Amino acid sequence: MLDQIKSDIKEISTDFSKMDRTDLLKYIEFMLKHLRYVDAFWYLFAEKKFGSEAAATLNEEVWATMGKIVARDIKEKFNVHKKGLDGFLQVQRYYYWAILTRYNVEKSDGELIITVPHCPPQEARLKKDMGEFNCKTMHRREFEAMAGEIDERIRVECIFAPPDPHPTDIFCKWRITIG
Image (tube, rainbow, N blue to C red; front, side, top):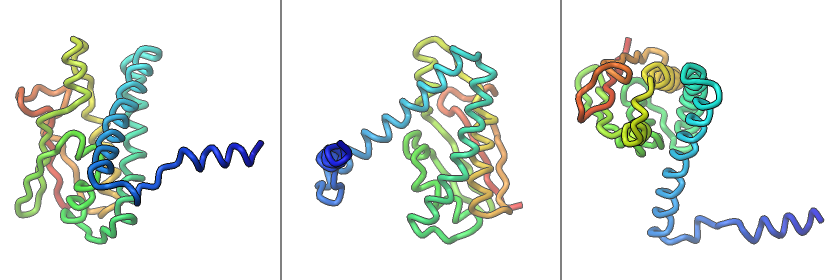
């Protein structure tokens, strides 16, 4: 029985090294889209079962944990050795959530400004007349966890994020500095 299961698993495995570039890119987009769906549905179901406050608290814990894990793994897998703002920026270039939401990053002397003009979870909620959810603390904790893995001197400041009032063309804005 175990040999049959191993055989079945081998048969359904995909060898990504044999995929052509077009199929590999389609698969990456597919996975990113479904990762976003998993994030959205777990939050919606937690919110429905336990309420908004409990869902937000769970979300904060998940993303604080993921921020640390993702930063550590990106550094390892993509040989990111830089510290400071350059290291933070390098990690963001590989970070799936930055890719999904298309963060805009402006680098100037001593700071990074991250703006998020499109936020799929918030846009989906608004489209369904659910209102924005409070994501400010969750993203602060996520960014702080990432920053701590890159360089303990990095400081994260939220300029605005839901539930704060914000321009219609930007959901949130963050300042990343070295303290």
